[in-house]
Image (cartoon, rainbow, N blue to C red; front, side, top):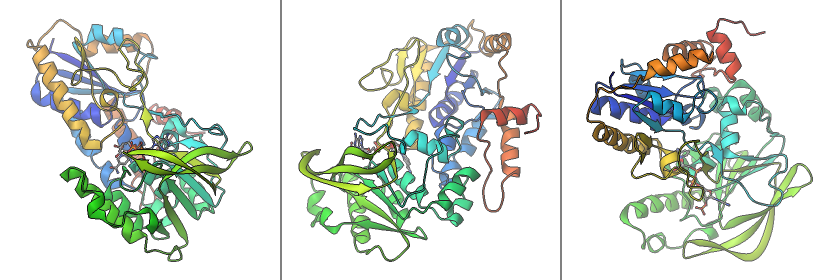
Length: 443
Ligand code: NAP
């Protein structure tokens, strides 16, 4: 039998690994196992629905999936349908590409109030991820607060103020678009516990806000450094360039008065959340003004409140431990040596290095692990059964897995069902996906 490799997770990390393996080990058999019936992980469920150009990278993953070496097993969940021990009996190598699907916990008094969401859930909701179909956030308020100064915070803030025309060109599900369009929200506050120079959002994402039809970005000039060159002088060349660009853009934003357009996106720096206010439902957020000393935010004792009916914490993600693999609880990842976990077990993407970086940051992870597998298995033919063993087990357990051809049928329906300029109309529950595949009509 040819060398067989199972990749768990079909997001960018999983597909870059499959692609690298195909090149390094042209004879091997690669199976991508995915818990949802749909492939592509964060490309489908994380990248903002109004960033369709970014989502186009899925075409590359599709090319990989369509090669003879690669099979897709969707709707197959690790530990529910098959476990790591079983997979390691079938496959020579198993690569964990399971990401970091959970929200880093917001540990504040009041964080359990209704109307407080983590970005994994909120982004999943507006992206039509089946896990969050029923999140049902109440957007019936004038203001929202997004905690965090990363690209996810910018995405969430932007989607909340997107116009009907902007949403129509995206692939947000109808129930989400309706909720956003009906919302009376005029002000979204993005709060960062540190300063503008420490913000993690990137410049393209920042500049995009200036081009929104109905929303003007608002920045307090007194929160920006007077001398940009001096402020970035201690940074290395790459960081300096990035920060300089951001500070210049924020400087341009600081000249807006807020009257230019009907909605505002406020950048509130040096503001650390202290408490979520309200009875059962969030009514506001209490913050403490900070100053940044040696890169860390320190409270100044000055407290202020922002009234809002929605809080989204975009403060980062956490992975789940995988039964049968080691786990570093403190760092929230699988301990590994450049992707090698143990004999025959590897990790790539956010489960390997934590939740940071852009989509293409996953490519080197895949290359590295493909090199390891190439080195660790000099014989490209071994005695393991590979996909035969997996399929026999899934059949015995009566699991209806979704093949790549099935996914292509689902995708064709999504494209066919799109209206107006929308690129697709997503299936948003697993049940409706499986019904469509099994030829059942929706009731
Ligand atoms: P991130 O870039 O790490 O940003 C997290 C933000 O949350 C930081 O501003 C952080 O502040 C803040 N934070 C963390 N804990 C906090 C707490 N307890 N209280 C208040 N604030 C807290 O993470 P992300 O935005 O989730 O993005 C994850 C990765 O995906 C990033 O690499 C991002 O660039 C990438 N991404 C890229 C795009 C794009 O390219 N368009 C879009 C989405 C995501 P401190 O800095 O002070 O810790």
